[in-house]
Length: 413
Image (cartoon, rainbow, N blue to C red):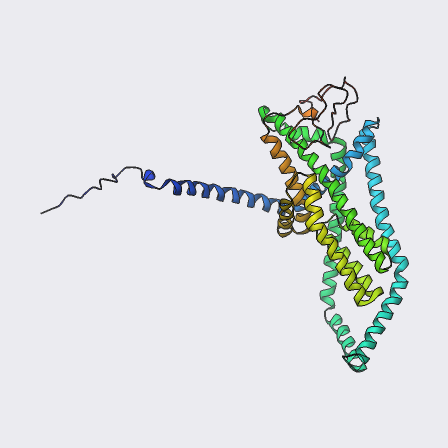
């Protein structure tokens, strides 16, 4: 006797089984594969940025430098200087200030080198005397054997040391090339940034073009605020460590404070390197106890910078929560090293200002947005067409009369 195949009354043969899957599981699966796609896209973007880092890093630094120098260029243009001449004046002045600071540091260190050399010799004699007559009670032969072993180690690893020196020379060449590329890009950003931005915005659909234009201008405004806050943090670092070195009687206080100011523009790493130089000089001139005190001063200033100044000043300047600033710096340092730590917060600031502007329901005309000040999702206080209305863009002068006309949107750069 044969039995017919029993059909499942709850699951017909050709029926879609989607309805039998719990709704929560379907939503989780949909979110999961979308998150995987987004993560893969982000990974691809990060990989591409790393592959093109030779171009991306100078381009990003040029944007930061442009944000720092744009207000000065704008003021010169406002007093009837041609934009090209204003750009040249500001760049030359900026390079002169940077070169002057570096020259001052090198000159002061060079002039103080003989005194430091004498103090190093005196410190070495004290260390040798302590090793011979102090608790270690070493013999002269043991110290000489240690020196001979150190010399032998250097001779045996001469090839490795030479290779490291060649690698360092290559790195210096790459840094010089990056500096020249950064300078070249900065010139065009300051002299024709508005034309470049208008050309890029033209690739956006027309119905959202003005909104994207406004978001980009406000993002650049947040970048301007960021570099100003960073300069303030650098000044506090230099003054704090300089005062500590002066109290301890460490020589070369002013060049060391200047070095700290320059290094503070590189988050975390710059402060560590420049603070380390100060501690070494204190060790030579003030002894072990003095070096420990200077180290405590440097660590205290670094903690003040990392946990108070950067979160509060940078967070307030770029409208970011202090926790977001700390996490951005940490993530940038892990993902991209020094360059990642340098660019993480400004990138987050630009994205934050741009997204806030895009999400705002109504936006002003792009000509009303002052890219040097306005980073909120609100128009300027001045009404369009009034004598106070600022037609401020990276590539345009401020309007100084009510007859100023807004720039044409379709004009080619």
